[in-house]
Length: 577
Image (cartoon, rainbow, N blue to C red; front, side):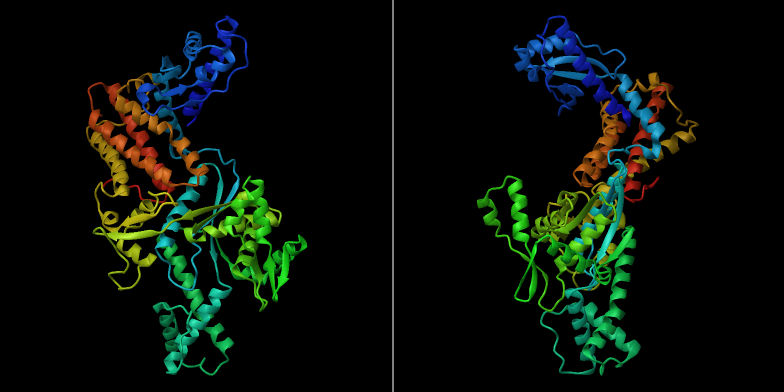
């Protein structure tokens, strides 16, 4: 994987040395070297790399860019590098073209690094916590959880490949208002079994799962709770139903091929005193006040100061209509926001350098106040990264699907996984960036043809395995090629494919930087496309044994890249289809 980076570093040195040589020869005036960029042209026919060094130097060298480009190119030395030629284009761009040594070196990288190919030390072993799904345990998981699960799990995998120590976490909201509402809903459904005059709470959970829990409890234990106090009854019902819901969540996640490093329970924050401690800390810092029997956090003041430091105007800030937040209600109970501050503090206290949360887009307004709260308690809010995820719609036959065929009810994660292969779901949910709305096509997800992106990629891997198997029957097996043999790969389709393979680690780093695993699904899909293009243009089994072995080496490199990505995303990599 060093080849591409080595090539970039070589080119940077080549250009600087050529400029200095031109200065020494009097072809350019003595001046400080200009800052220039090296980039990949949109069309590889214009070179594998291009630099604007001549344009960047126009001011300091006081001459036309084309003349500077001529001075640079006339002093360039490409011997013993990965480049074979350069040429001037347009107003003074200089384009560089790889030599055969580059392509041979890339394939040698893959051959040597195997399952580690694509890995990077970019993350330098820093600890990153990726918290995702964290669905409310009072009911079944839905489509948003399905998308968030695939995005979060694959993002953690990308970060690990990029050299981070990534850690996956599920936050279980087993305390607070939603649990009280859960308890009241269960109680009402339970009592309705024995009494006809019990009204259901207006804001209660209406799902059939609440009724199912109440009936199941009654079938197992009868009416033993009817004559107990409301508090005793609700506690008993929650203690019965909540573990079942959490167990179902855990089994659904396993079915979805997601294994968390930690299931963190909100209740432990309250039991340990960490929620109270964070309120005390904010109070010590002068960031709370009492009003109408409640304790409030000065969110408006904190966020305003942050925005002013970012250069935002007061007029802009006023339009945001920032408000303060309640930390402790009049009844003495902490709000969800308070527990959330304590939870994020706990994550940083556990030694994570960065904490990533994947939230639904409806939590947009919560982002700034949570980052601000981290600043307020003495942490760096910039180390809290929030990936906002838009809604997903299920589509079949061009129409939106809202109900499960099996149950006639709203589609849940488990329903999806019964209808769609897990690999399809994981891959398809990673084909659109988190911040874009998504139509998940159920028809495509179950197809076993090239319309299904994961099948298309898996088929490319299986096709290579089939090629190797067929050649083996003819007594032909791959062997290690010499650099000179690999230099025989000169067809445009061969070079395009090798160039793509060379950028794998770069793509991993880019995906990690942007917290966007969809970059890798697009990359591997393009890998499959370029392989099919190569295979259709260049016969592998040819009379020239050296060329055949070189093409086999290329096939094996593609096979390695595809397998590394599918393994990374915990997706099956079949050898035949």
